[in-house]
Image (cartoon, one colour):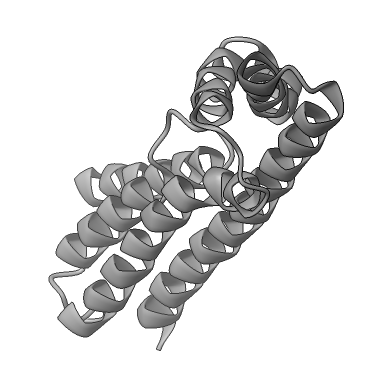
Length: 160
């Protein structure tokens, strides 16, 4: 009975981790890694080895790095101002409280407003906002791929 409850916690941690790859406030890869550690412990490390956990840890670190780099990558490529980067961060934070569409569009809007405040050039502000958004979307796609890779490696370790 207790073991079943622990496996349910593992599944819940991993599911929450997948959600966290899209929702900025939830540390997705970290939750998946914690779930894998718990799963390895439940199984007394017979199928989930330390090598498996090491690989999952590396993927979790890569995911966290992608999270920090993604938004700034597109904007920096266009030479965005510090105001644009601050605006993107504020937009991302505000997007958490405004639902799915807010999560998608508030970082773009924040970056565009920040760039406009900095340079007073509407066309450039729009381009920086778009570049920031593209960077975020690419980063999210990479994080989702990493999350499913982590889960796949964990499941493969359990089944093999």
